[in-house]
Image (cartoon, rainbow, N blue to C red; front, side, top):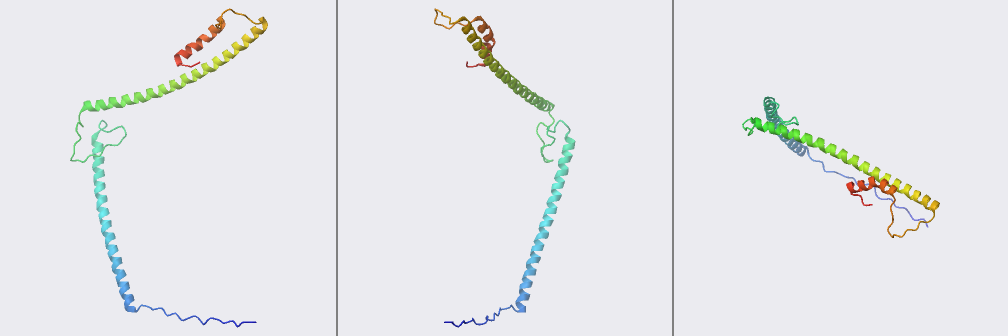
Length: 189
């Protein structure tokens, strides 16, 4: 019942085809040629970049010279001047009325921003006070209801001939500030 075990034959001998030395020499020569071409292209790019950097430095020096010669009136408030080429001249650059108008504009804008801040603060204060008035009104109304309950218990039921609810003098006096606040702030109670 034992079956014989058969082993595979030994591994085949692999023979890789190796290029000849002539092919290696051709391949290496081709790689050298490509590397030399790449190196030459990199040198050209480097020369172009150096030339471009020189032009940029020259333009930056011109811009700095214009900035120094322009003076404080022509420079915007941000501290940077707009780029202008030396050959171009900005229209109205020497007009004192234009400079004065710009100064007025900047000052008016600063004043407007300050007023907006004050207005926002005032609105917040008014809103807080309105909320306080509403809370106080609720507290006073609750006190009046408790007082009316106590009075009704001590005096007994009050019969009136009119169908309209009567408002006491005390409640009219205590509600007057709240009614005025409602009419000013547009409350809905």
